Image (cartoon, rainbow, N blue to C red; front, side):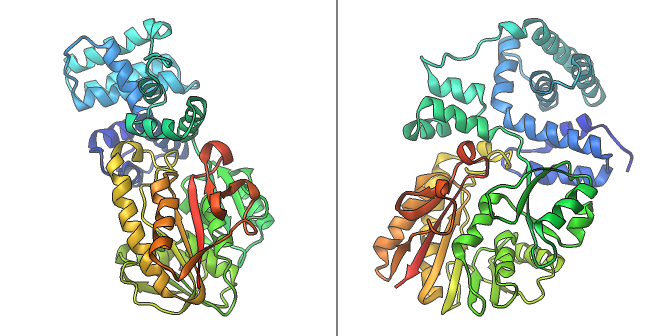
Length: 442
């Protein structure tokens, strides 16, 4: 298909994005269809992710600059969001480029009335941007923080119940950062230093290592990842450093029986296979055939020929007497808001309790999978207490045959959470928010 600009791709994605779908999948479809050059691909991704993250603040500005009662079509609204995002957050994009191209796109897909409206709002912003005001922090901290840092008010209220205003602002700033890509080296095929050299040859910028002692690197500029030689040769798995810590917490031994009950897309279970160097029974299980197929494809790319695969519901696992059981449970994902652009808008507060009930059910049945003296590691990519220690405490009260195992000897001291569990926080550790606890079957 013919090429179109990054801004046009972004506009199409945002118009089609219905609110509870996955915009990254829509974006990937357009990028595959039009196959833009690397620079345009990166800009399209930046525009989509940034516009969605900052949507509440952008809409506040649009409402402030619009005439009262003016109805805005999805075309005009999203063109305004994209243009204002560039004007407010992208220093390298000239004002004339952000405004003129936004207006031209509305002319292409809409009518002159919509184009005139978009042009008027953008000109008003350029004229009055220094005079824009936001809700007062002291009088209404929830409305101020949710507007200025673009988060749903219900989530800000939850943060403020646990943290100070200052720390809440640090959290939302971390949620709005542009995260680097985390890569876990496949040590069965390459050392960390070898991977570093090959990534640089692939055109990536290696920016940090993550936690000390982990086979992990953070990179920029590796787009698309699938085209990199190091990816095709199975030298790494895309995985955040916080998730890589899960392998340490499981700490499986060669010759043992290991199962990941919620294994897709395969980052954690393939790491477990690498830790034991393939000298153990490692089973990747998942309730979804299509998701399990992704795990298998990743395992084959990494050269993990000895892994086993099973379709099964974690609430009815059908496995017994395993030495190590990993439960990377379905969760709200509220610890990875920097990486998952849409979650802050697609999730509701009621989802936390709903997921917690499911997590309790899954973890309860996972204990039956472990043999006597076996270990069950429970993890989520959420920082909400109900999904984390709340689930663990509930299960321990119900099950008298498990006890909490202290993970502090296995992970860096600054990620150890109360009662010897683990919690990483984006604003503290610079990684995804993740919780983990290790239970031993007595």
